[in-house]
View 1 (cartoon, one colour):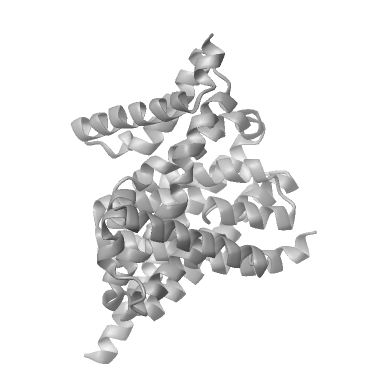
View 2 (cartoon, helix red, strand yellow):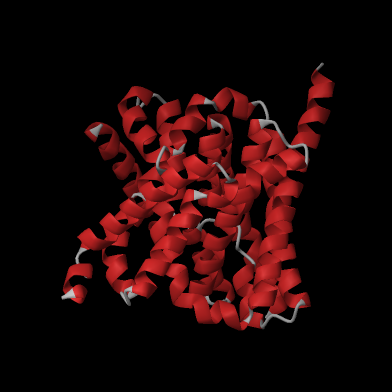
Length: 231
Length: 117
């Protein structure tokens, strides 16, 4: 009975929306960044599924419908980019070089630290594209020979971390200007970080969306070249 | 609203076609974002046509990542096996990227701004 009920798309969609609404209420009530609605919802749903022994596949039957909306949302990021094009174009040099520096830092520090701490070759390779958006990261990892499901998990965790404390960390470092903050959070924490930036500031969110695309482009081109020596 | 969704989905589809046909490492949705920007700039698509749909999607952007995040539960064992290299690299690297990116942007912009003034 439970299996039949949870295997319909209705279950996954209702559970996700329900828990997300609760997580948002909690976040607004408490106001602490550690109650990030995305991270909280993910944790809440996992606990729910484990508690009632519902297989992930059943949840995903409905989850897929929500995940689908990620596609048109990425397209929609073009709209704020267009509205704020003047503010973005006047700093195109700093934006491009900032993302380039961030992309190199991400690849080298993620794989370098994993290597120093004795990570296996597969883990080192799977860590390398961690700051790019999920579909790009998986494409890259399949090319260089990591474990793509592990990369997908690492990418989501990276995004949650950046979304939870990205804007606060930037302010701590004196990066207060919305475009620079958006660039930093978008480059480090792709779409989940962008979602948080959209709440903080619309220009910041638009620049973060741009950073997802740029970081993906740059990483997709340089990472396979860098890892030629690692085979 | 429906017109906006139709345009967004059409551009996403075009992006997927371009990504597949040209064997690009860039996913179709990122190409689609570029296509929308181009279509708006060329005035083929008017901002009013897509504004409502885009606003609805972007104000709920975070929600759409949740199912991907729940997928983490399938790989718990994999992560537990090498939690130290994975965890340390993930945390340190994420903060390092934000610092380097943000500082680079600020530094270059301040330098550029001084030249203009």
